[in-house]
Structures are given as C-alpha cells and as structure tokens.
Length: 272
Image (cartoon, rainbow, N blue to C red; front, side, top):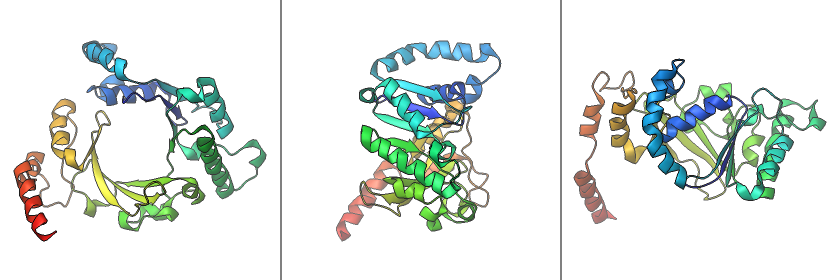
C-alpha cells in the first residue's frame, strides 16, 4: 500500500485465504464477511468499497501471492519464483513460514537442526544475492511457551537457534504474559536480535483488530478503541485486571490526553 512491490509465498494458507486477509487489511470489511458462504453478504460491501479500492490501486505497488501450501517447497523454488517475476520488480518478500521450507534435496537425511540451519542460511544468501529484504516466521519451542516475555530469547525458537543466527533482525511475539498487558487483544513483542540498529532486548506492545487484522501501536490506542465501532471486535480488559468488566471507554478517559502529555514533557524537561 506504500507503493512497494511485494511477493508473499504461503506455505500454510490457500491463496484465497491470503487474498481475503489482504482485502480486510486494506478495507474495513471483516474477514467473517469476506469468508461468508453467502455471496450476497459480501458482494454489497465489496461493491460499496470499490471506488476507494480503485483510488488505492493507483498508489499501490504490485502484490503477488504464490500458494505452495500443498507442495514441498525449497529455497531453490523461491529462487525460481523470484526469477520468474524479475529481481528488479521486487522490493520485499514474505514467506509464511520458515518451518515449512524443506532443506535442499542433498540433505534429505539431515536432522531437524541441520535442516533448519541450512534453510535459514540459504534464505540469507538469497536475500544478500538479490538485495531483497526477506521476512519469515518461526514458532516458539515448548520451553519458551512457559516463559514470560522478559525471559524469552533466541534459545526460545523452535527447531533450531541457527534460524536466528542467520537473521539480521529477530522479533518475538507473545500473547500469554497477562501481567504485562491490559487488553485481551493486546500483543507483546521483544527485539532479541538487531544487526541493523544494534538495539535489542526492547519490549513493548501493540493492539490488533481480529475483524480485519489491522495493527495499531501504543500511540494509536484511541484509534484502536474507536475502530471497534466499525468491526465489532473485542476491546475487553484481561481477566484479573482491576478494570475487568468496565468498558474500554474508561481506559480511554483515564489515559493521558494531549494536554496532559504536554505537561508531562514540560515537567520532564526541568530535570533533563
């Protein structure tokens, strides 16, 4: 949507499912509506959105969805897809996800660690060769699932820590640490490796809308709360929170407004 050309390789969802998610992200039409088996329930909303969609298309880059969910997929197959589209036509590549990529044919007897290490290294080599940023995901191991986000680190990655060794930037996403979040649909993240800027160990959170999968950062909490009026998504406090059962409007009223923030900054400058 920023004008960049993106390749999205899905090894998990079908092309149709990915397409629905992208339309939901671009519009305010919920996934439930787009995935409905009743054509009339989504046709009217899509028709109403078409004028806006046409305006967006003029500013958007190209977006390719390649569905390899039913086939074995290797880094060599990704190279073939890139060559077909043209290296010069791509600005970013997403692969969902690295655990589904098979090691090269010459490593059929490799252990899970060796296979994952080879795949991660091959992805990095391809990214360096083509000068195209590549984004993928891995799962957390069983030990990591029992940890709070402050204790999660590179050794919490499933299959092989070598996956992170090959990455320039590694971010862990978590949603089970209830002590560190206020809302049910709040997600935590932690930067565990960063060759780009050197900043790691940083933890924060973001908010997401389950209706359209849109993401809002901490500075956009008011927009996130208001957005629920369009999608009907949940904005409940977590169980155990002192404000559980109260409406999110209370959270909005209790959060500092712009004037209060200015006062905080003014006071802080006195001690800077």
